[in-house]
Image (spheres, rainbow, N blue to C red):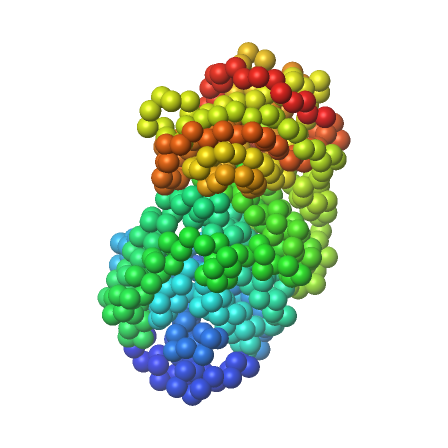
Length: 555
């Protein structure tokens, strides 16, 4: 491995290029361009520089950017920019030290660089550390006003550089997909497109389910505290090292961040600031998104609300996978989502919106895979052919959290279906109850032999009177002869929730389920194979279901 070029003298080379007006003391410092031959951490065909610039909130937070431009670019050539803003671009490693022997740009999106021939296609790639991470100073602020100011500053900075055309597209997965949604919500002219794989659409719902805390209130804080305090590499430049040590010098940053996750009130300013679905209302940045409907990390909650509120062009891949990228493959080489062409479609999307190039292939707006493993094309998502509310009666259970054998739940079933029927979009349950505690609602696909697959779930606090809440979004086709079962009961152990059982007997006197239905006979097939995770899920969530009364009929 070759070492990096010394960068200690980089601070003397201040650049005034660009349109971003900042105080002289805060002007960016740029390192000399470094190629792969000089540092093997730089992608082949790229030239790497580092830059520093202020956030947009008027604080003293300084952001660090790694910029990768095509090697040999003409000095006057301007390029559209693919920007990613996040927590995982630290030179020492993405989520933990990675035993690098010398500093260099993160390889988090090396798959995009290689899979899309990014530099041969004439794009710049800019990776910006959010405050508190990598080479950026400031207190980490998980998708709060501070980080949103960082995203705004990063878009403005990338658009204003002398090597930029001023057209910016954002790209990411998970955390740096969330910042793409933030970028959309900021509604900046320079941002022309967003590609967001497996984001969180509303932060509150990832930390609490209708008032019931989830394990994320503890483990997310721990994970990002570890990343924010990761030591910089010994050969990092002095400015990078100083910024990277910010969290250690300010322990109140970690404490304040952790305490925010524990705020219970969804109407607090803390959570309203982070409700990206609600804040998307009226926005119109072109979006290409992915969402795994069997996600265990960034669950399909509030995606429909976000897309309903967003008024611009929308594209998406939606299906039964877990927390993966569009190009990821499983151990045996199969694509994790099952659909080929992720980078071709992504770059066609960026070419259209950042370069004005007409797409050479007419991709479907939405490519959807349901539990049958088949892919279909749709102009919108969801496609709803009939909306219905089914009343499924009532029952009682003891809110014991799985601590004993007392009546943990009650179940109601539909009549067997005469033909295949798909449940799409976001089911919603309403309960009228006596008693106080927690409730878990599960939906099952029940085969004629009584075996069942749990395909949707949600929990909530339950008070006397009426309670209504959304389940997770889904795409699940019930085959002819199958039934839908609804289970209502205490929160079962081993899941994602930290519930406090009341040990009360909960009596549900009335219960209804709002469903959006689609006829699979109308599907328009499109290319793609079965997502491998689907079979793992079916193996883990198929079990005999105790018989329950048949109380409703699906249309």
